[in-house]
Image 1: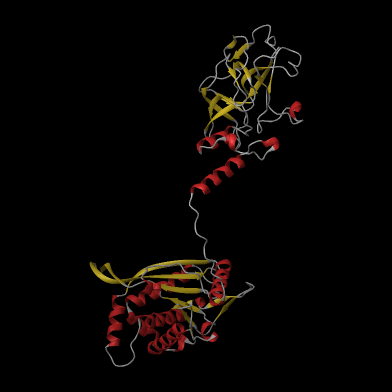
Image 2: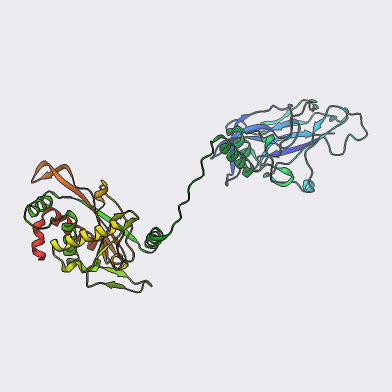
Length: 436
């Protein structure tokens, strides 16, 4: 007599507790093979086909389309050939034996490592009476169990319906995948590996990348920036400013005899005036984090591009220099940077940095602080833009100012106050007369 096996809804993974029946794929009395999909269900994650681990005759199915089936509740029952039959009987058409699906649990009797196999049974191994098909509405008589046709599809050891769906979505043949699980069972990782291998084979090989050694100045810069990013809780605020009056004042100064005054020199003078008003920004946090060191002198660093990369020369005692003197020292250090002749003393000891990234044609930036400094002013390009001036729309020379600061040193009020002072000096450069 065939043995009737009950197949419950398996755990479909990811904490799901049930699934809704979307479509039955077999009928009661139909002969199925091992791992043949019997129902399509929908979970909170996806629609999947559920294969049955038993081969034989479907004697009952549970649940109507649209009904929620809890995990562990019966899906179908299948009449399978009893174990041990057929050794001394007349061979007949083969019947596919039962096999558990990995991921759905393994019965105690299967823990010895049994595999699915096709086993001959006798022609008299059919049940003496038909097996009733249980449904939610009551038992329904089923046709007597039949034998599986002689042609049986290959049995593929697979982990779950989700694995089958993944393989199908990527056009993979499970029969061509080698499983890494127990007894060659195919796991999700096996399918993912096959997908990756397929993608690599379909993508033209890229030429080997060049590895540029990180050494010398570039290595020093990298280490300093990495340390700054790791240790300093930096924040940035910014504001647009009308620089029309500043540019007009520069043009007026440069009409006089003597060295030309650069925009960078004017900005440097504004920075020293701002730091005199907000001295807490001219500081650094002790290396062990135990305190804040406030510097009495302003050693003004400024970003300069050289053939060896970005360098930050330092104008020492910048608070003691007037605009013309600042311009001369900035020009000298810039020329030394381009020539690669800056000394270590000219590249160290800064307490505040001015970064004029507008020379690169950009408007804004959120730079990394020059460790261990606590603040940096950034200046974007100065370009004509629409601007409301004295109540009317006009074309003005506008720039964006950004201010990055160590939040351990000050709060937003101090940072915003400094940035607003700088913006006011850019818009009304006559304010600098108050700082002389």
